[in-house]
Length: 145
Image 1: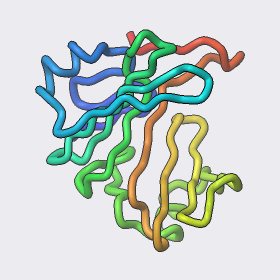
Image 2 (image 1 turned 60 degrees about the vertical axis):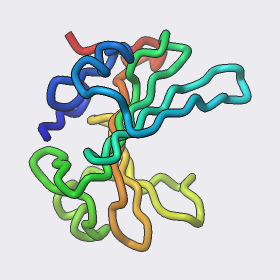
Image 3 (image 1 turned 30 degrees about the vertical axis):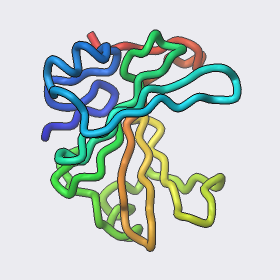
Image 4 (image 1 turned 90 degrees about the vertical axis):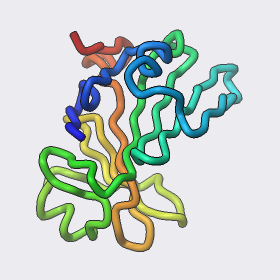
């Protein structure tokens, strides 16, 4: 699996519709619509065999805005990060910083320049997430071309 921060992975790019993704990956193993208190929602698709979760947000007309990887084969910038310790990950990516808002269930390290976060459970990377990039104002998405 080729992962491209700020763009997507393999043949899937941020901004794709659910139909475009389904044409490439087929039906997800599981899907659910998650409603938010502000009235928005996300359609979460999980591909269990691939270790991928895709989120399509209502406020972006259900276009792909977030991708989470949990497969041990998923490489971030050429490094298999799932299962790495904090020390190992920080050695590979010293620009990461600890997200102080994480809770007692784990830790999150952020990589703002790549719109990525890494979630640690029991001291090991459990998954990492790529987010669609925004412009400097933080209001406008920069969709891949």
